[in-house]
Length: 169
Image (cartoon, rainbow, N blue to C red; front, side, top):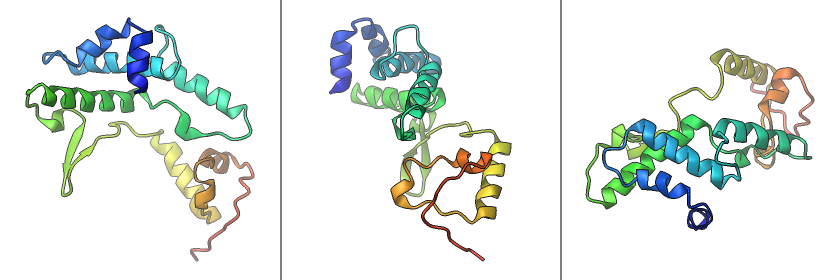
């Protein structure tokens, strides 16, 4: 119900919400409307971007004892995919049948699954370096640390103080 609370307090979002009712809305219209809603949901102002809000949230979190990456707003790309799926669902409720694979879904043997992003989470070279370093150090992240573990600590050589080291030898 948080979105309803946000809408009642921020009437400027009515136009953004109305975009999801417009069957002729483009992907760009939907992404922009979803972005506006997401920024307000995460406590930003009308002129803020998801990218800036994500950075600010990370900086604030990094200043505390524990960094909770799960509390960061999604990336703009992930938000756009979520907004596409929301648009598809609203249109379905309105009786408009759209091709789901054009609106944030992909087909699999299990049925439709959400497209989380069409972009890599980080540059490929960074991901490859991280994978190599993790493999070289033979690290295993225990489930109890999974939420707060930052793989970049491994990449830059910080002591990650893992309680479990697994030899895949």
